Each structure stands twice: as structure tokens, then as C-alpha cells.
Length: 562
Image (cartoon, rainbow, N blue to C red; front, side, top):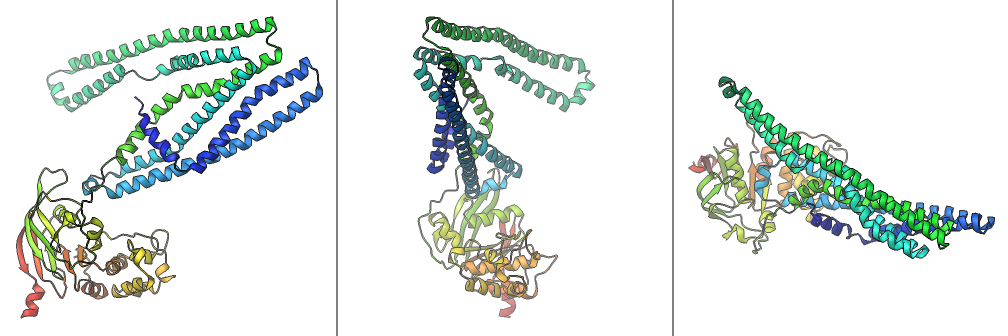
């Protein structure tokens, strides 16, 4: 069953650019009109040759024919160019819809993210953007052509026009019922094939039992019965195909005989001359291709159905909802967990159990002992990328769901463990997400505080240097300094450091100094397998089996108090 709603949505996107649509429509209208003039010019040329015997009329008509094809060629160029641009724009719109949807889905989607599925969707979008545009344009062109040729027929001979109007739908039905449309396997055959595959899988899975009990013969007979069902369905389809073939031929022959008979009677009665007969035959020949393409339209729509369903099924997924209404321009960084529990993405088991703690503004807390799932769940809860199963979380004494998501995220800076490039230039990476409110002075200051200015100064173009695969290569340490500079630019009261201190390569020197500067006057949550060598740590939370098993006073605090 073809879902025309998908194509209606595609047409709606194409209709957004009315200038391209108008160009394509006008060009198609010109092409249809030139094709409708062709039989009339053929009639005039034959009149000049056989009736009037006027060489000047033949020459004039020949020049008009040349001009007609020149105009048609220009219109064809405009139409194809506008259609190609519309297809490219449709591809851009669909890809942007895809990207925007991908970036706004709930956090649970990313846990089961499949790159192969994403690649398949991008391929579907690229294919549909071109094929659907061409299909819609071809339908419009063929429709205009048939209308123009029917008007031309009505001008030349009204009775023949009525005859064409009557037989055109009949020819379309015959084409739809032609044997070529029975090449697709029947539903019965497909079901039998699925049963065969299922039974084969069972036989392979239980081959030991089958061989031990001597069941090979029984399995062979059972699979043979299913195979016979497939053969029976194929034979029934072949019988239907064999019956329809001569039926289609007889009906087509009767239609041709009716047309020839009608034209012959008119010729005998003197109401149809040789030039008019040639013009009407030209019209009939010109109608064949557009009628065949329109008759094949359902088959082409069905071919793209699977790709369209996959695209719109993804786009119709619900995005992350923001129910918050409270605005916080720049909070203090106070964070409260009140008996918070959190389930895993499939909600089959609990990941975090009754977390209950308060982080005061400017407090530095280290979380250690956790598993990757527990850490990610805790960070997602703070970022409100997932909701707790029970309990509540407060930021500056306001429940997280009540705060606008954009305002909440503006108050949180995250330095991730898997630091990666987010832009082509160094400046773009440092000011990522805040470019609308970041000037070069702020970016430069952040680079200096993160001690990234040292290596940036030696770059070919400084802050405007292209970095990454197509630019200047930078080390992982330099990449981390850029991430620290990004947090300085954001200047949020709540800071999350996701495993920034590696045991294999200890953070020392300028990078350690940059971290020390970054955590000053910020509520900081540091997730790290080991205790980092920072001058100030207020508390240490040991997170094991989803619970905080130990709440220790920071080692550095004890030393400073001693």
C-alpha cells in the first residue's frame, strides 16, 4: 500500500522555494505547448506538399519546426536546471531536518546509536532527494503534455478527441495489468519463503539433536513440503500471467482496430484528409510515452516507499521536551540531590540508588570508584538529558525540570574525557557554542588562562589556524588545553570534569595550573578513577554499585587545616 502522505510532505518541502517551482512550471508549460504544436505543423507541411503544393509553405513550416525544437530545448534546459536545484535543496532540507532531529533526541537514543543505520538513512535521503524530485517533475510534465495534446486533438477533430479520452484510461489499466507487473513474488510465495528460512534456521540450530535422533529424513520432508508451497504459489502466478498476456493483446488490438476504423470511415466520407490523418497519428504516437510513465507511477512510488518510511519514521520521533519555564541568567552553582534513583536506558535495572548530597557554591568534589554506566547516568541527570526514576535534583534551589533547558546548560561547563575538534579553526573551537557573544579579546584571554596561548602563538595564523585532518595537527595535550579554554569562555558556575586526569600520562605543569585556575569559584564535579593531584579538593565521593558508599573530606583540605 502506497502512503501518499509521505509524497505530500515532500511536495510541501518543494513548494517552499516558489521561484524554482515557478521556473520549472513555466518551462514545462512551454515544452507541452511546443509538443502540441508539432502535429499542427505536420498537418501544414503535408498540406503544402500534397494539397496546395506550395514550396514556400513547406519552407516556412520547416523553419517553424526548427524554431519549435529550439524553444523546446531551451525550456528543457530551464526545467531540468530548476528541477536539479529543487532536488538539491530538498536534499539539504531533509539532511538538516535529520541533523536537527538527531541532536534533539532523548539521551536514551544515543545509548543504542547505530552508525550503520545513520549511514543508511543518509543514503536514503540522498536517493529520495533526486528520485522524488524527478518523479514529481516528470508527473507534472507528462500531465501537462497529455492535456496539451488532448486540446490539440480537440482542435483538429472532436470525435477523435472523444475517442482518445475514452480509451486513454483503458490503456492505462491494460498497462497496469500487463504480465510484467506479475514478476514480483506473490504474498503467498513470500510467506512460504519466510517459513522456509525459519525452519532452516531451526534445523541448523538443532543439528545435533536431529542427527542423534536420525531426523534428517523427517526434516528433509518437512522442508520439501514448504518448498512445494512456494512452487505452487509460483505456478499459480505463472498461470495468471499466461491468462493476462493474450487478454491484454486482444484488448490492445481491438483498441487499435477501433481507432483505424474510425479514421478510415472519416477518410471515406471526406471529413478527414491525409494531412489531418497524419497529424492525429502523430498525436497518438506522442501520447504513448507520457501515458506509459504515468501508468508506471505506482510501481515507482512503491519502489521508494521503504526509504521514505525509514526517513519519516526517524524524523517523526519525539524530541527531548523542555517543560522548564524558570530562567537563570547566572546561578551560584549550588546543586542538590534528594534521594535520586536512576534506571538504565531500557529501564530494566537501577543504575543509581538513593543519591542524597548537597554541593555548596564553589565546592570541589571528586567522584571515584564508579562504573562507566554510573558515571554517564549521573552526568546525564545533571544535564537533564535523562529523568530520575525517583527523587529530585535542584540547581540553585530550583528543581531541574522547572528550569529552561537552555538556561540550565548555559550554567554548566563540561570538559569531556573524549575531547575532540568541534570546528575548523582554533578560535572556533575555543568559542564553540558561544560565538554570538564571544569576541577575540575574550577568546585570547581564555587561551592565556588555559596556557594554550603558548602553542597557539607558534601556529601559522594564530587563533585563525585551521586544525584537524585538513589543517595543522595538534597533540592530545593541546586539544585538552583548548577544551579548558572553551570552559573559560563559557564561564559557567557549575563545572563537570569528565576523567581529565590520566593515570598513564599524569597532568602536570601548565595543564595542571590551568585546571587549578578553572575550578576557582566554581562548583566542580571531577569524575576520575584516581584522586587528582589538585591543591584543593573539598570532598571525595566513592560511588560503588550505584550508591555513595563513602563521603570523605578532601585530602588537600585536611593538609591545609593541619
